[in-house]
Image 1: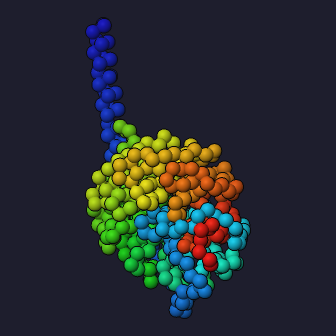
Image 2: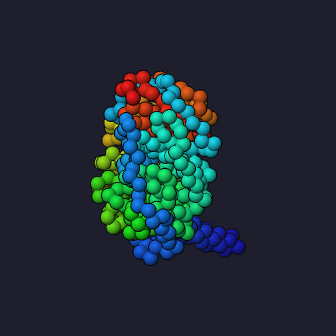
Image 3: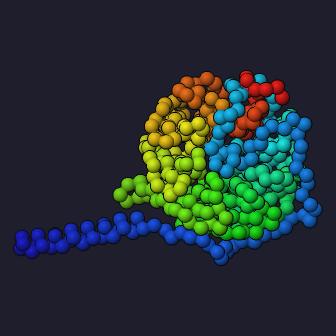
Length: 413
């Protein structure tokens, strides 16, 4: 009897091990990815037949900040701007809604998406609202400036081209999926990620889809671009390097969390031209090679990460839910310093000159020195991304308040 019982237990153990191994293999099975040439569930509606208005012109134009992150590489930095600490608010305008993502700026106007789907154009000289346009489903992202056009993506499944001068709809792409990704425009093409896992390439002038690449996992973040390559990360733990012109897959890197699970990416990738930086929700920060997607280094922060890494002058900055902002070397991943504040850091940092700005969900915004993390400025207000900067002003999105600040070292406006 004992021998039969032992044999039965051994057989059961073998079966359980087999089932467990099969489950692990199933969990680690990677979703298929590739070009979705059918592009189902898409239509384009054309707006007014009037020609696009000339782009607005400001009496004293500042350097543009065209998209989330400042440009195609999504570095969230302007290290060349020496504004110094924010002083003397120039104006403040209440938006009457949440600004989770920062505005963009060009030709004397700021453009910001509000949580419940309104896009607002604001005069950067005085804070006056010039026009407002509403879309369904909400727009938790930044719009993108492209010449006389403004591109807005929404959770209602639309990508819309607006006339920057007056907010009139020029065309609208309607899909069966939601967008939380902030669009980027490069050489006449809009690139934006969708909840259904597709990265869309859309003609700027017509709204027609040029190609769509299915990544196999939900996309919340925004693509970054360097040269002829575009990079995107998804909830399935995959990071892709694609050819910009046609969406051809150049490389794919699947980052593991442990023996069973893969990572999950909410944040957007950023790049310094040699490395792609990705922050996983589990707390892993990784640097991959632009050329082949090879993992160069990884660091474990030990807390939830939702922030896109900010990159400037050989440093990468990221903050987590434990209230710690980290600075690492971009080439080796060596930690240079940390700065702990009370609260949780959800959104990305902003680097301007020798200062790095960041906010907490508890309603504080800070500026630290990029060299050592020493705090030099604190403001009671703000929860998400602090805002943007030009060569003359800071424009901060402090929760529901849009504020223009002069910098202590800024040139006269």
